Image (tube, rainbow, N blue to C red; front, side, top):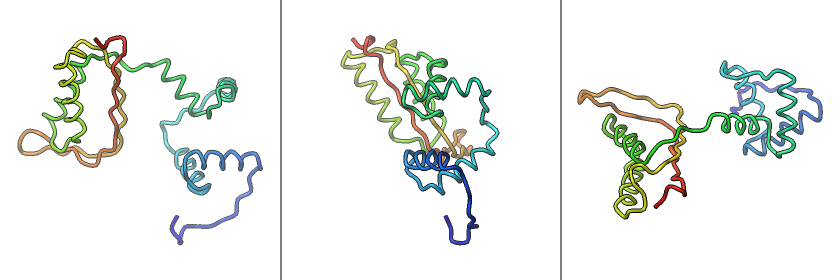
Amino acid sequence: MAREDLHFRLRIPEELKKLVEDEAKTNNRSMTAEIIARLQNSFDNTRVQLPLGLRDRVQNAAKISGRSLRDEVVSALDKAYPPPQLTVGDLINFFENIQKDAEGNPPSMTKAVEALKAQIAKGEIDLSTKVEMQTEFEGGKYTPTSKGKGKIEGIKGKVRYSISKEDKK
């Protein structure tokens, strides 16, 4: 926080303070940073308010599983909406299309394609082997270039994939 930021005293119940402290520790930030992040998130229109009865049930499930309310909701949604089932061929096409359509792609995509092709060459997997893929992207900019392609800049993200053990040869 910058020195010129507004300072003020805030009274909150001890139980709420403890929750903020615990979440700040979990998120590796100060209590002030935690409060600011949560306040800023409250203005995000993608937030969903859970009906009171549902919120209570999810909070109880979170206590039983030892997770935060957020983690419990994410876990339930992840189970309800599993990632699509893809094949190794789909994944290679995905990576190669990104490489073909845009300059500045991460070298990790090239390495992933090379690693998958090496596994195919060794006979460990084939193009029909099932794969789970998860993507997380934020920010960034795509700028068309004169070559009919584009340039990707500043994207922070991850593409994770795992090959089903049952489908390995």
